[in-house]
Length: 391
Image 1 (tube, rainbow, N blue to C red):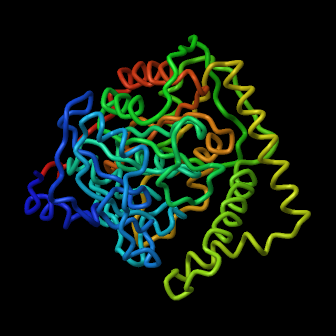
Image 2 (image 1 turned 120 degrees about the vertical axis):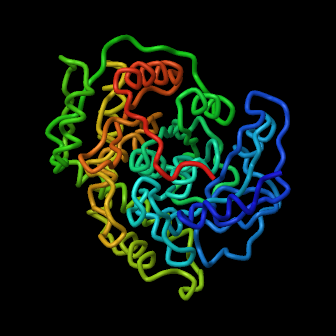
């Protein structure tokens, strides 16, 4: 049984959880005793399955998503549902219906999104691990902004059953945790996890046209092994990300067709409207870009073993600011190519805000990706608990 009163008191500072299972219990297995929160767009039987939307406020899941069922079967304690960006479309986690999620390292700052509640709850110690979803970076961005670890499986190696979809071509459900050991146990339990390893080689992305914060640029330069080959894509990151955004907007427009507009925020309606307004010739260009970039990325990781990037070009920012347009420029690449990717703590700004490092690998070589992350993590030693940790 969970200690609801203590959890409520701790959660009041963060607004990370939106629903609890007061009868939550675990079982035996590799995740016995591990408490897990689940993003509100992933079905948990008996709990509201809202997707962060007013549209689905009263919908109760009648069964677990496949990923949740696999965690339960391994002994995990599913404690409740987590706040998120409305419809998982955005990277700030300032939900117009359920309120903003706070960054536990700096109240008043965004935890990233769209899985902001998933990252904030884990970072602050309200649960041991969580499930998020990732369409263009929505696990890795909040993992970076909250100073924890997040893994996006390859798109076709994790079930989408029980997911309130954003864009099934890019969506993946994945875990967040405060250490790589638990993150890997979660990943092995809930997704198809390949035992392939990687060599010492790797590559970095250059000439991406993204303005990178000086603190991130310095931390990334220090984190990268010397002499890695450099990869350049055919288009600027902003153009690649926008092509993916249009794909997502079209998918969401179809998914929400017929929905009561009064139960969708103005922001969501504006974002989704980009999809149907796209001219056919521009849509064709978008599709060509996504296909070419996917092929380039898959070829790069096949040749070099892995690709190393910052997780975000910017550190966490106040809720009073709009989310930076470029925030998903680095993370979206793995989604478009369907590749596994992991974010780990890389360093800190001068005023104590966490920064993330991202590694992208090959499907079937997830064990190798985690081995690389452990090596980098040992060298960086950048994980810190927030001052408000615990409940």
